Image (cartoon, rainbow, N blue to C red; front, side, top):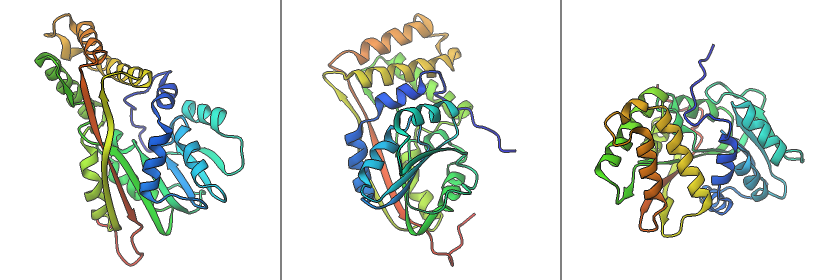
Amino acid sequence: MMKKTAYLMDNPEEAIRLDMKTDPEAVRRQAQICGIAAGARVMDAGCGSGKTTAVLFDMIQPGGSIVGVDFAEDRLHFAQNNYGGKPGIEFRLMDLRAPLDGLGQFDFIWVRFVLEHYREGAQDIITAVSGSLAPEGTLCLLDLDYNCLSHYPIKPEMEVALQAIMHKMMHAYNFDPYIGRKLYTYLYDQAFRDIKVNMTPHHLIYGHLRDSDDFNWIKKIEMASAKAPENFEAYPGGCEGFLEDFTAFFHDPRRFTYTPLMICTGKKPRAEKAIKE
């Protein structure tokens, strides 16, 4: 039986966090870069709250359809309640690491902010979802690089603590803050054709802080800190002191935070080309 991977951000408010942080305009821009357009059949692999699925659904009208896939029952329930219930959009409970039997073939498979949670296993997901691509279908991989680690100005002890937290997340929770730089090579190694890469800002935070960024970042820092309490034994004030310092930094309009987004697309390998092991 396939082992279920512990999800770093798993908590009762996760569907709400995912919903709040999703910017429909950003999703539309990214989907246009990937070539998604009217009439396409699309899979949203790792659909979370379903908000992105709904944005993509609107983009592929008229004539398009979309299936949102996720392994979390609570998030799928949220997605169905908030974005389901109309012809052409559906949500399915499935594990992306296994063959996605029964879904048919797709013109585009969209994998956004999923592979970062599979430091080990990302290539297995690429292989599994590729089995559902139609001939000449496009795989769209979207993920961040140097995730959560680019801030200025922060105290030296805060930077050390952030690096320590990320090290714990990588080795205990299979999280990969550097997945963005790996996407091209993963597609290349699996013999994808016509690979294209685009880099654009995802987080670009300075001056006024939006409520969605405030909720998203503070929730991420709270969750990650709670999973690595041993990293704060030497920090002034312990974990609470770190959270207070980060919150004060993040609410200061002088602060600058950024994270690049990598958008990597490729065509399904031809049948005669074996995927490299």
